[in-house]
Amino acid sequence: MTEPAKPRRGPGRPRQDEADEGPGTQERIRLAAREVFAERGYDKTSVRGVAKVAGVDPALVHHYFGSKDDLFAAAIEVTMEPALVVPAIVGEGPEGIGERLARYFLGIWENPVSRAPLLAVIRSALTHEAAAAVLRRLVLRRVLERVAADLDVPDPTFRAELAASHMIGIALLRYVVQVEPLASADPEDIVVLVAPTLQRYLTEE
Amino acid sequence: MTEPAKPRRGPGRPRQDEADEGPGTQERIRLAAREVFAERGYDKTSVRGVAKVAGVDPALVHHYFGSKDDLFAAAIEVTMEPALVVPAIVGEGPEGIGERLARYFLGIWENPVSRAPLLAVIRSALTHEAAAAVLRRLVLRRVLERVAADLDVPDPTFRAELAASHMIGIALLRYVVQVEPLASADPEDIVVLVAPTLQRYLTEE
Image (tube, chains in turn red, brown):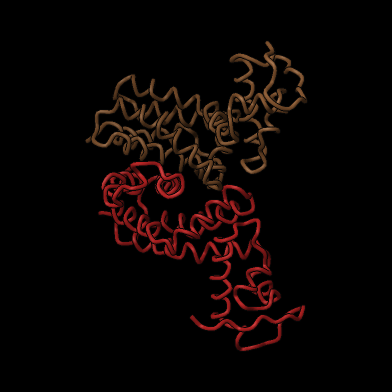
């Protein structure tokens, strides 16, 4: 971990400064946004709060990310970066795609580091229309349509959404509501049953 | 609609009173609980607020339903009453069960009267552990296990949960996040694709 730069207190657009510029700073703000949204939820997150955790001036956050919703979009992007690997999984071809996707998705959720911000995103989208709109745009444009582009089925985006709906529903019952036996089931037992479903949605007419 | 009884203001256990006793009053309190939880969410709902909407003394609500969580359980029961029909659907036998379930479930969500309280339940469970615990107990004991009892597959409760997870995920993406084309799809187009999945989970080894 690098030491964050001291926050500046002055108002207005920040001075050019090596410590506060460049992709490193933007990445730090994105990671701070993910952390703050995950910990405090959508309501209690502010541009100022994210700036503080990132160790930068709030004006700099505004400069790079605009509004709170843009910041939420950035937090989702960081959270869903693993999901952007999904097109690569799809790109490997139709054979075994259902199994690869199911295992990959459960892997992200089994990892507490990615689980917390994913939960925060889902909670925010369920309780705030602005957050739902951001998720809708990102999920649809950045992931589902890219997945769909590689599919050779009718209505590929619709098919990708059905597959996504199943995986999100499993995450919800397993990690949030924690119904048994699903909550304690071996991930591989879930993969065995769910893989053929995803396989059918993504490859069969 | 019957005229609600005037709220009483006195503290303590309410007097015996024809208007405030019996299953009619309990049902009125349940319906009021559903309405208040759906409108105000879990946080802002109180026993007092439900009593006011039901037109009864708060002490009577306490007498019949105990705590706020018991009241939430009652609200879920009223909301999920249609879900209690599910065992009947399962009881009709394995042939076509996937299609009957998918069509029935989407029907409940397509109806705005049942959709609002269902959404409120899901939102509350996602944001409050107490609400999740109530949902877990009810979903697991009252619905999933009754469905599972009629299934002739290994791990029937696990299978029923996988089917439920898919339907809940569809509800989430279609009605809450509203991703397209899923949000505007003809319910029958969803049934056609999802029915074989549910059929497989609930009937095939």
